[in-house]
Image (cartoon, rainbow, N blue to C red):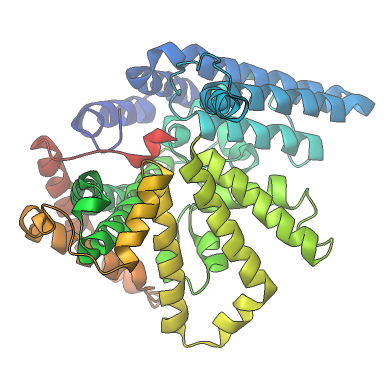
Length: 460
């Protein structure tokens, strides 16, 4: 079940909110609803989710009480979490690599990837490390901790909510009319981003990429990458905004996850604005512990490269994701080595164009089915080509709706809206409510009509 579905919008969410507001057992309602939500799509992996909750709950208590053996307890807990992630996500990938490197014929395990495992494993890791550091007290109640681990708004695709960010809310939280409105507004903005922009542009992106580089001319190859760049932004940012909105409606404050990343004037700034909960997780739990930028230039460059290699692997067990991660790691090293100073002296529009170009080239590796397809797509983009047997099919199959969504999405993504003067938001409240309701109705009608509705980050 995804947020942008008729089942969720018109059945699950209203029923959940009604019970949540009427019944006094808030955590109980949230936990049961979360387990139903997860079981709707992956019932066979529900025990795995609860096992992860039990594992981290137990190790949190052990770490807090282990005295001089705290580091050993942390190491065992971290290893257990990584083993879970490694088995389900990387066993097949590394078996294939061993077969290729050593000319072996080991059976490649056919393992189904559990929904949200990359997110709830990182969630557990941050909890254990924070308990070890003394940044948070271990949760004494297993059911409260299980509610945190299973919270459906952020379970499948984030944001990666650290326990310390919601520890107080897990015990006591307040829901007011203003907060419900804020949450509804966030939710509708995210829903519109997902349904009206990402879904519409995504249909064009999939059509072009599925045609293959050999069938595209240079213009259509660039159009494919542009469509995918807008699709992945609004697909993921939209889902994050919906999660944040639901959080507000039930009394939680989830961290922001996107902040106009395509308006960045460097790749370094891009990563401060893109998937903020993930990039900050890598910074706090990997980059800084490795030494960050405190151990000299060479070690800093090595740390950046290693962190983004793992960032690529986190997104998927495939060579294309590794190249995508390394691409961003190298760009960050270059900016740290001096390119960042050059970009800072350039006109803002020039620096923004450079950053957007680098990010879009990275998306080619991220989206392509394999390395060969990515290289062919890049060749088509940078070598004048008239395409194959059907080079201009995009002109027919990509219609006004796709072009409109692409242009509106690009304009909103590239522009940083200035902060509204004090009082303007309050005076504009009736208009905001009318627009939000209209957007919700439009999205509902679109989904009811059975329009194209994939979700990219279900792959991770």
